[in-house]
Amino acid sequence: MSEKIMFIVPNAMGHIHPAFGLARILAKKGYSILFAVPHPIHQYVVKNGFRCISLDGLPFATNGENFMDMTNKEFRIGYLDNLIDRLYDKLYNARENRMLQLVEEHRPDIILLDSFQSSDFLILYKLLKKYNIKFGFIQIMLSFIQQPKSLPLDCCVIPDETTDYDKHWKRYYARRFFKDVSDRIIFMGKSNLSMIKDKFKKNGIPLKYSISTKQVFRVGFNNIPELITTPFELEFTNHKQHYQQYLGSVIDHERKETYEPSFISFFDQIDQTSKIIFCSLGTVYTVSNKSSQINQFFTSLIDVAKKLKDYIFVVSLSKEYSAKLGRTPPNIHFFENVPQLMILSKTSVFITHGGSQSVKESIYNRVPMLAYPIWWDQPGFAARIAYYGLGLVGTLGTDNADQITEKINLLIYDKSFYDRLHRFSVNLAKNYTEDSILQKFEETFAGQIIE
Image (cartoon, rainbow, N blue to C red; front, side, top):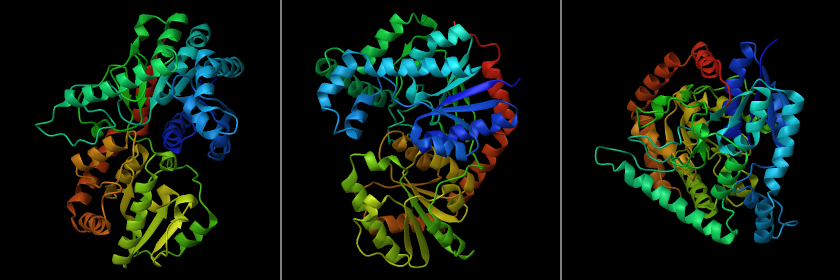
């Protein structure tokens, strides 16, 4: 009987797609795959050929209360409900009940938890021990952990011999410290970190898995395997933790992407000799706090299309944003959903937010990138695009049409970008084969026992 692997992944395409890539490899080797995901992406997971169960609700101590405030304004009284949730462990209790139900019902042999939901480990711990379930994090970006000659992943600095790495980490830790102090005051001692420390102690988790705060974005846990679905070659540092395994890009070339019928009609009419500029700022830009800069950027992009009349501009953009734009030239086309793997195969330049999955897919297709990062890990990936000569970086809301045009022309006519992308892509294909990924996976979990 094959081992059953349960992937626990949030409702975000940038997280679900690399999980698909790893799951597809493991399924080919005989593992039974089960996804536990929020209901809104249940159908998409099934469409891509995987068994799926619904895991609604939010992980505790990850600012889920703020998300609920934004999405349930009619039913929540902002701060008051946020405070009640924290004081009475409402998110924790709901998550614990659902996790218990899922594990009891499906009894997985291995659980892979998206690292952005790391606090779920505190809930799962007793179940992992009770049923002897193997466990690891799936990390879809790069390492979050502070290493020698590394920078926080939200840092846009392109390092050189003068870079003071420690200074940038100290700045990050200082911001986080003051945020934690503020939350302790506002929420009567119930900041994210204090809640995690409390559950770590109450659930009897051994010090072997001690809380790790020397990293960005999340609270981590030491000595828990971490499968990183991004190539080590994109790191600035040569260091990693002994429990980290880099699996390469793990792009799922079989995935069935979402798109509107009008896109396929448009795509089929594109001439083989057409030169395409593809622009996508991912999916989370719609909930960022930079809407004015984003509007200004797309207004400038329309002016760029007027200048570069020989190019076809394909733009992935929500109707909320595209409706605000004025008249557009005939060589720019807006769609809500663009199948990225399909369009990149014909793209000359990719204007991207610098999300990890977009960077990996652009490298695979050897398409030079022009990055306009917005938040989270995007500044760090944009810095790597520039550092390794895979493209250029712009400034959202600052670059005008002339500056964007100049960058696009440089990427098109300077063939050194294509040469570096070619070498990078060939090297990754050699270093990360399906067999090597499977070997790393099996070595990671061979004989693992959660203590």
